[in-house]
Picture 1 (cartoon, rainbow, N blue to C red):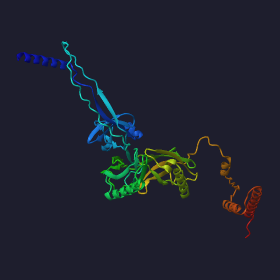
Picture 2: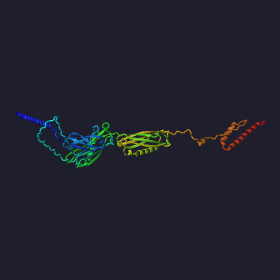
Picture 3: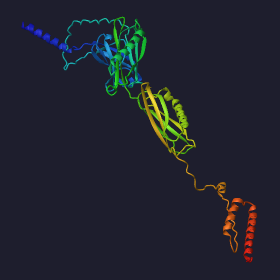
Picture 4: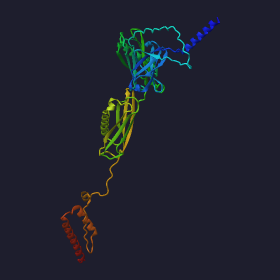
Length: 491
């Protein structure tokens, strides 16, 4: 009995030694299913989005980027039901979710990863013993894979136009629904929910009703065929009393749910966030010369800059002169020329885009008859009025002053003007005085002289004749007086 026990122990020991020489891990294969997710990205999203994740059966999987717009997701499941993939989320470099993007799920690509057997070498050589026969392991048959179904994929887009995204303006939304799969699909649900902003609930309901009615009309009862796409654009008004400081952004989520003939359900959604802007622009003006003279033109240069992220359009432009001496006709003519010139600028005709700058020149001629005393400082004011829509306008103006002075006369090296000097020469007055040696008749001389000036104009050759006759007359009068004095008196 003891001998049998010893033989059993020896045999057990040999079996244990043989088990240590056998490999502990047998080669086996694990099956992992992965999906390629095709995303339709814009150029900007390709540059700014670096990571992606999806939720499948309440588990989040992070993908590996294969190319610019393709991510590969390894899903730890033997078979994957595409209808259980809820959504795909993209992230920027900081890891912040950017948006929910509609996607196209490709067919499943199973990958078999074989692990090589691990062989452990014994520490010390053991004696070689004859192998012990073991029973073969049972072969496990792989389960039959289900037949591949056509790809079910749906794309939804919500595109907002921000050109008029201002208080009192309008938000234009374009909704797109496209069957990007390989099987016909029926749209079962449409929703458009505003997640931020202060838009009136009644306005949202009315807006959504118009959008959904139009989409259902375009889709029809038969649904969307593979590759078929429908599109609807609608406008949502932003009230003029909207509080931009309390709610600066308006965010919405557009969601579409569809089902195919195999009762597979697919959902796509698109998020849109619009930041409201404040329309504004600046205008500046300068003059080529700060001082001009009557008869010279004044050249002005104006620069208009759109300082907002909203497209503006020209509403009105005028010129006025708060100071100056332009006549009414001159002001009307200059204002009409200025308006026509500004209205012909392409930027104002097609829309004045964000951060756009327009510079142009305008020339105002001054007539030589300009009254410097009435307007020594000429101030030209240019007023521009731009608008987003009929209810949103912005007005800005600029004053450009110019000094107007008369030319200073040149004093030195002035040419002599002979005709002017000749005009200043006065004809000398000739005064004739006749004196007698004894009794000069002063009073008589004055009377005769006055009479000769009033009655007998003495000019030219007749001047000497009259002088001779006057002298003879005076001489005869004096002679008679002498004769009378020398005659004796009779008693």
